[in-house]
Length: 370
Image 1 (cartoon, rainbow, N blue to C red):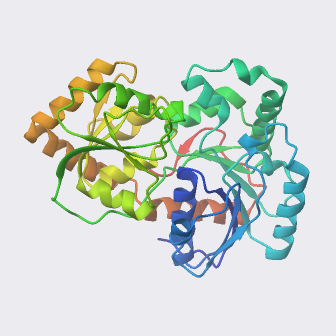
Image 2: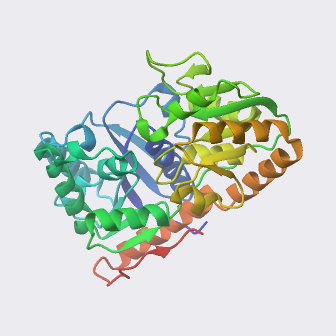
Image 3: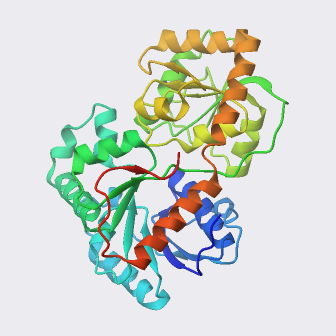
């Protein structure tokens, strides 16, 4: 990895879902290269297991209790957020502002700003075929705030080409966009696989389509375990593991022979990458992001076809050679998406922004992380 030239970075994050996994890993990798990272959270405070993911004393956790933008579509908390975050910039004097959300990019920052598009409510609604509520005034305001943030930043980043196209279609950002794929530290190698299927996701999040697995589970040869909070509608055909700390989930992936994600919507899918690194055979929904990242290293199914999902799971349970081949292919493919390559791409972008924030940048997607 290239050296950081002692950069100081103010990076925002939330603690809900994969953004924390991405931000904590990236912040730790950047700190290992010599950067000083101030990781500023909005929304719920980090749990103890999440704090343990910050493995370098050059990563400084700052918790603000500010509202998450998608939980505050009216922008009621925005004036407080602007005051708190710009005061942090004055105190920290960062070289770069790295935002893992959108609306804060319009604040009066002194340092150059980049925005990472991990997800957005509009793309979620489109993927779930549920958009009528987005015409309400509060959500129209949210849409305008996202578009303004994407256009005000010096650069914006997507974790996949497929999601880059979605963001462009929805918001037509004026800032230059780049593709930098997410990365993780590799899992330790193991051949000790057990005959069960693992999935991960929040039951209430329709985009994860966990309901498809519970519907398909009856008649599947192997047990299915699902990590993530359940609810009163959770069905008995699968084993509900509840919330698992990050290390415990990755340990389960080391044991699972198959990892399934029938999601309708994934801008990247860090849990799939983690499962692939752990040597799971992948059964994924046939959506553009998964095709882009895992074509040739996974089995793809129509996420609306319960019977097809059941048949594909049973085929993987039954055919040992095919399953072993897919396990090897997934692990090999996962090595493309390394944390080192991701951190190097961000460091290069930071240094380019610092060197000349006014330098014209390409207006088309430039893939920095193959």
